[in-house]
Length: 168
Image (cartoon, one colour):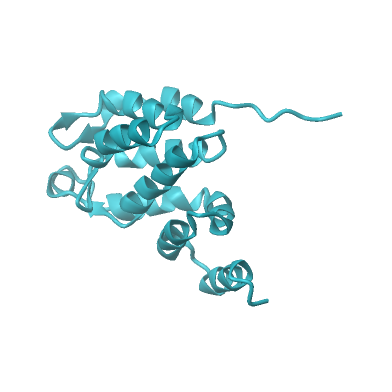
């Protein structure tokens, strides 16, 4: 008997969020759910990049995080459980890297969200093993960059890096 893994994890996460309660650069986050859906559904490199830029220039802009970055982390982690095209998976991880490297935008600090960077990293830590799985793929460097920011156990990270690089 084979078990079937349900699909659409990212879609469930997108639908669970009240996006109107979050901000992006320039205002409300009402366009974020559609951009996330497009990224997850992208079948070509062009489709993936188009969706990525709608997010990268909204939830995180040159390292400055806006409040919609926090729920986006959960969606992006859930997407790693879905069947994504290689280009979509590359950019899901790249967006996670951008978010986990970011800190709160000045407007977010003024709204009392000065801890947005650490909160996004805490949220990403919930998907730690999904990130470790990516160490064995073409996305290794991106996964390592994320893990360097979210992994609390540097000894474990070093052990997995050695294993992936074939030194043990």
